[in-house]
Length: 76
Image (cartoon, rainbow, N blue to C red; front, side):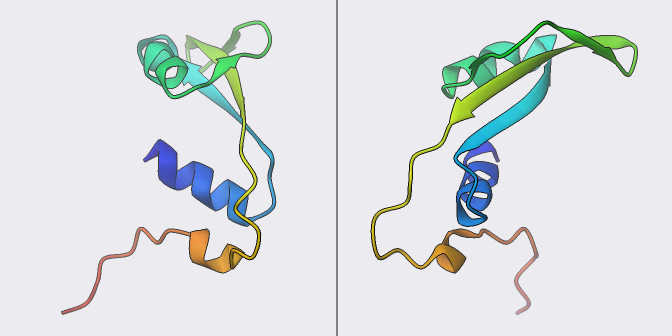
Protein backbone atom coordinates (compact mmCIF):
# COMPACT_ATOMS: atom_id res chain seq x y z
CA UNK A 1 0.00 0.00 0.00
CA UNK A 2 2.86 2.37 0.79
CA UNK A 3 4.41 1.73 -2.62
CA UNK A 4 1.10 2.55 -4.31
CA UNK A 5 0.82 5.84 -2.42
CA UNK A 6 4.41 6.73 -3.32
CA UNK A 7 3.80 5.91 -6.99
CA UNK A 8 0.74 8.12 -7.01
CA UNK A 9 2.59 10.97 -5.30
CA UNK A 10 5.40 10.68 -7.88
CA UNK A 11 2.87 10.67 -10.72
CA UNK A 12 1.41 13.91 -9.38
CA UNK A 13 4.85 15.52 -9.34
CA UNK A 14 5.66 15.21 -5.65
CA UNK A 15 9.30 14.72 -4.76
CA UNK A 16 8.68 14.27 -1.03
CA UNK A 17 6.11 12.29 0.91
CA UNK A 18 5.15 13.25 4.48
CA UNK A 19 2.89 11.15 6.67
CA UNK A 20 1.68 10.94 10.25
CA UNK A 21 2.28 7.50 11.70
CA UNK A 22 0.91 5.82 14.81
CA UNK A 23 3.48 4.35 17.18
CA UNK A 24 2.62 0.84 16.00
CA UNK A 25 3.36 1.67 12.34
CA UNK A 26 6.48 3.73 13.02
CA UNK A 27 8.94 0.87 12.48
CA UNK A 28 7.10 -0.29 9.35
CA UNK A 29 7.47 3.18 7.84
CA UNK A 30 11.11 3.44 8.92
CA UNK A 31 11.82 0.11 7.22
CA UNK A 32 10.28 1.62 4.04
CA UNK A 33 12.78 4.50 4.14
CA UNK A 34 10.88 7.16 6.08
CA UNK A 35 12.71 9.28 8.67
CA UNK A 36 11.40 11.38 11.53
CA UNK A 37 10.51 14.89 10.45
CA UNK A 38 9.52 16.88 13.51
CA UNK A 39 8.12 16.40 16.97
CA UNK A 40 5.31 13.92 17.67
CA UNK A 41 1.79 15.35 17.40
CA UNK A 42 -1.23 14.35 19.42
CA UNK A 43 -4.09 13.51 17.06
CA UNK A 44 -7.06 11.22 17.59
CA UNK A 45 -6.12 10.60 21.26
CA UNK A 46 -2.74 9.06 20.48
CA UNK A 47 0.67 10.39 19.49
CA UNK A 48 1.40 10.63 15.80
CA UNK A 49 4.91 10.65 14.42
CA UNK A 50 5.64 12.89 11.45
CA UNK A 51 7.76 10.94 8.96
CA UNK A 52 9.09 11.96 5.55
CA UNK A 53 10.77 10.39 2.55
CA UNK A 54 12.30 11.89 -0.59
CA UNK A 55 10.88 10.12 -3.61
CA UNK A 56 12.99 9.29 -6.65
CA UNK A 57 12.21 10.89 -9.98
CA UNK A 58 10.64 8.50 -12.49
CA UNK A 59 12.93 7.42 -15.33
CA UNK A 60 13.15 9.90 -18.22
CA UNK A 61 10.46 9.40 -20.79
CA UNK A 62 8.10 7.73 -18.32
CA UNK A 63 4.47 8.53 -18.87
CA UNK A 64 3.53 9.79 -15.43
CA UNK A 65 -0.08 8.69 -15.89
CA UNK A 66 1.10 5.07 -15.99
CA UNK A 67 2.45 5.43 -12.45
CA UNK A 68 -0.96 6.05 -10.93
CA UNK A 69 -2.27 2.84 -9.42
CA UNK A 70 -5.97 2.22 -9.17
CA UNK A 71 -7.60 0.69 -6.12
CA UNK A 72 -10.81 -0.04 -7.99
CA UNK A 73 -11.92 -3.61 -8.39
CA UNK A 74 -11.62 -4.98 -11.92
CA UNK A 75 -14.95 -5.86 -13.50
CA UNK A 76 -15.18 -9.41 -14.97
